[in-house]
Length: 306
Image (spheres, rainbow, N blue to C red):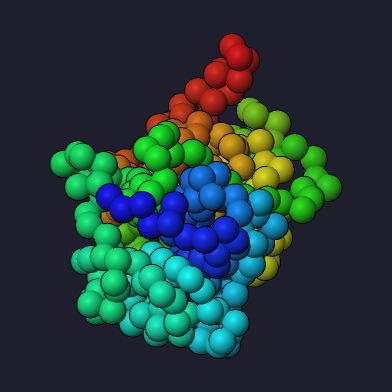
């Protein structure tokens, strides 16, 4: 461990690099909350791709968000840069920050560019089990000097919920076929949500995701991430594959059912929230409609008892 964060002067500038996926960005927010809670005086900038910048905008734990062409500009200058991505572009951003301290995980390619290499999360957390992504990212903060403590839930900020009758959000897409539950089963679930739960199904479809099969229901197509956040924040339930929107739902505390195929739920399940995670060693197609409906019903039963 280091006391690097304690040694930084008041109001020092810290840039956290978080490129790539929506889920990774959402699961970075607990680490940022730990950092800001420990050193609220630090000026924290998140360097992120434009399509995911809305994850960090309006966050009380982030002072600035930089994306696009500004990633390699002088505006990134920092006292400490923390690379949580590790890819080639993130290394260029690390150098562009011209920071006195350059931190990142030692297993990253080109980690010799770091003068503060961070060891494995298992070594930091003193465990040898598989760790969740949120734990992995938070472990960097512990190594840099944040006292060990419970890692909080992911946190997002929405500006407004849509003016709709009570609804459930369904995200039937994923990044690969072996992570995608059959469309016809999502349609059965949508029908039951309307008939048995009194919730209007709203299907979420991003760029390149063909939603023709769900045209009988309301479909939110190609909405900016800010709109997606607003939609999910007002939902009564969320159902979807292992994908970024499921982590958005978790961050807003929306009860959810997440279906896992190829990914490891120990690493990628929704973090610290009221989630029912369904998986099958024989593939996502082996998860039945009845299993999903039972999981949804358990959410309703839990709410009644509460």
